Each structure stands twice: as structure tokens, then as C-alpha cells.
Length: 293
Length: 283
Image (cartoon, rainbow over the protein chains, first blue to last red):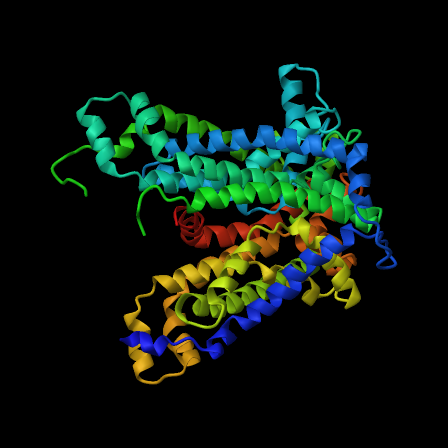
């Protein structure tokens, strides 16, 4: 019928040409160029000679890289479950449309629109020794002060607190959206059976949003592996590199010490880690249990 | 599916009162750091030198905010951020609408293949390309320029993906009538399709704007001259000489000042943002 008017024509492709050219020049080419860089000895003065996998060997043998990798893994292992659990809790608590709940939703999401520099400025004023909010509170209560930003262990923890504060809005919103999708007849059946709220939660609510929980977790893994600004601005990776994440390592190697080949190799390794998580996300997102569409 | 004769509300199983109280308590924890920084921003630097616990006592002052108007470069940075964020938003909207329209509603050779390739772009994180991009922009001397700050994020596949979804949702009958009238493809796009996607344009536009405004890594390495800083980078640079020359009160005021634009955008467009965030997940 009218499909004959939708004939394939190369001219129709002109609509995608502007974006595709930007896509190729600014994404595809740099992606390939990054791989090329990682296989060459490159410095500030331009491309050098082919060194094979030497850059990768140098990265993997670098104790600073291994420490950064460990920091990133620890950071992801603690921040992601916290974000998922808190986000899920808030979504459950605010899953009703009243004036109060929409106010709280707006409030919990509001920190997400701030830039990393504002977030870190706020949290530095909380954690700095002497003048910070925590220091003032500790003094009032009579506790000995803690060097939140300068003690190993505490510094990564402080970065994590700021990050959870900053990123909490997205998981909450995603969970709220998923909760809205649960068919209400499931709940009605449960009400007829006089099921306890806890039973409803574990038997109906959580299983119904299991896919979203996985999805949120993976999105957060991808995002938190890219931790950079918070650590750089709050602790500068210190003390002794105990809060330096992978991306900050790449930044320092590539843009402070200008060892471009090595930084490119490190970024390819991080890309591989993130790609695995993204693939998992794609698989889960496209697997549709309910045949809707 | 809802049954009118039942008073039963499914939400009541989850959103009960004790949970709400805990959420309210968490919101206080959430706001405490913000209240603290707002408090610092309305104290004079001299008072804060004596100790920050003076925040809880009078007198308060707006001197720090007035100082922003006079002494700092914050306004120049603010302007840079505005140019970069608006430029990026405009670029993303134009590119994504054109591409999304074609991917969703037109036929052309390799359409499916190209779309899949673009979708793969969603999985490429910034750090996989940033080093190569930095070199490329170096070759063309694009660092420390608005073009250099705007261009990289135009390649983001997210907008194309979002617009394709929206164009797909428009019923086929609407442009079929126009096709029968022999209107050109671009005319149909411009006169009929585009106006129908205004809500989507708003959503994508707000997101791009916020993302651009808050972008950190690229401006950090691309804009190295102080007068080309975006506000985000400018605030970061004044953090490094922390509490020395400028004082806690002044820095706090600067932070409040810098977060006002995004918070205002957020308050006005809250509904669009929520739809975009939750809509993207369910689809």
C-alpha cells in the first residue's frame, strides 16, 4: 500500500550523514587511533615507533597501576551495592504519588544534576580537618578528630560517601519506574490471600523487578569504574595513592607525565573491563520476559 | 485492569509510614552538607577564621556573593559554560533529530547495519577515546576554543538512540498522507514530524545541557588557558588554592552561585528529566 512510498533510496541516507560523519571522526577514528597509540612509543612530540605490546607490559608491571586497579575494584565493590540498596529502599518508600513523596523524590535526585566540582567542594567542606562539618560535630560530641581525606582507608571511604550522595538519584528513579510497571492484579491477589507486607515484598515486588535490579547494578558498575573527578579533587589520590582510581591513573600518565602510549594501553584495559559490563547490560536489557512491545 | 469497586491500593504495601519516616531522615542527611555550605557562604571570612562553628551564630552577610560580582573570573567562566552547553545542546538536537528520523521512518541502503554500529557507540566510554581525541585536536589547534570544547560530545550516540525511539512512536498514517501529496522528505521532516517531537527535543536538550554544563574531564585537558575555563573547571582550579587566599566563605558562595543555573533548570524541567530517566529504563 503506502509502503511503496517508503522505497529504499540512497537520498534518504543524507539525513544520517551529518551525524555519521561526526560519529566517524570523533568516535570511531579516535577509538582506532587509541589502539594504534597503545602499540607505539609516543610522547609529546608525536608518534614514535612500533613497540608491540610493550606498553601493556609496562602498565601491567606498574605497581601504581595495580594499586589503582585494586582501588577501583574496592570502590566499585562498596559503592555499587550501597547505591543499589539505598536506591531500592528509597524507591519502595516513595512509591506513591503524594505531595510529600514527590518532594522527596525531587530532593534525592537533585544532587545528581550538580557538577563533580560542586559535589567535591561541598564534601570537602564536610570532611576537611578543623573547619569541616564532621570536625565541628566530632568536637561537639568530644570524639577525637579523624583525618577523613588524609588517612589511608578513610580517604577512599570519603570519596565513596560523596559519590553515593551524588549518584543516588538515578538508581532510585530507575527502581521507581520499574515498580510502576508491576501489574496491580498481582498485588490484589496477594491482598486476597492476606499476605504480609514482607511476604509481598519478597515474593512479588522483588522478583518482578529482578531484571531492573541487575540492570541498575551494571549501569552503576560501568559508571563507578569511571570514578575520576571526586578522587582527584577531594584527595588527589592520596595518601600514597590509596585513593587513586584507574581513570586518574590514566589521566596522570597521559596528561601529566605525557607517556601517551602507556596511558593509551591503560585506557584500553579499562575499556575492556567496561565493555564486559556493558555487554552484560545489553544482554539483560534485550532479554524480554514479558512479550510486550 | 483496575477494579473500581475495591478500595485496595497496591502502593500501600510498600510506601508505608515507617519507611517514609526513614526516607525523611535520610533526606535530612542528604541536605546537611548543602545547608552547611550555604551557611558558610553567608558568613564573613573573618568570622570563619575564628572557627567554622560560628556558622550557627549571627551575624550573617551577603558580602561573599557581592565579591563574586567584583573580584572573581566566575562570570567569564559562567559565560564560557553557557556558550559550550548551548552549542552542544543545539548540535546534538540537530544531528540526533535528522539521524533519528531517518533511522526510524526511512529506508536507505545499510540502514540496519549503520544503526547497529551507532548503538555500539553507546558502549564506548570517554576514556577509550579521550587520549586520541586530545592528540587530534592538537593537530588542528582546536584546544582552548569553543569549537574544541563543543565538538567531542556531539558524537554521543545517546541522542540518536533516543530520537529514533521517539520518531518510531509516531503513527505511520501521519506522514503517509503527506507522502501521497508528493511532499519532499525534508519538508515532511521539518513541517510535520519535527513539531511532533517537541517534548522529546526538550528532554534530550535538557539532558545534553546538564551533561555539557557538568562535563569535567574533557574541558580539564582541552581548556588549559584560564580565560577559556568552563565554570566547572574554574571552580575546580580555585579549590586547589583552598582556604588560602580566598577563604571558605567566598569559595562556598562560589559553589552556590555555580550550582544555581543547573538547579534552576532542574526545578523548571523536573518532569521532563524524570520521564527521560525512567522512560529510558523501561523501554
